[in-house]
Image (cartoon, rainbow, N blue to C red):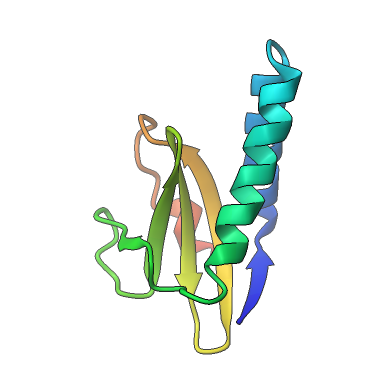
Length: 100
């Protein structure tokens, strides 16, 4: 299965990494590497994540990465990473409605 990162997901992951790197550059690099490894593992098991409760659709799922939620959509031939967000942030439907 092909994995595609939306521009929003790339921007959010970059923002989070920069925030972590301000105090702990090594931890930020580790966080990014583990994030990409978690996403790569979804290629073989795209439905491994749970449904996003705020959305309630079978095709929109999430996996947790520390205190962050990596939210993605499963299409027939691809997996689209929609966003990465802190688990305590208020939900914003606009983050997943834009799609890519």
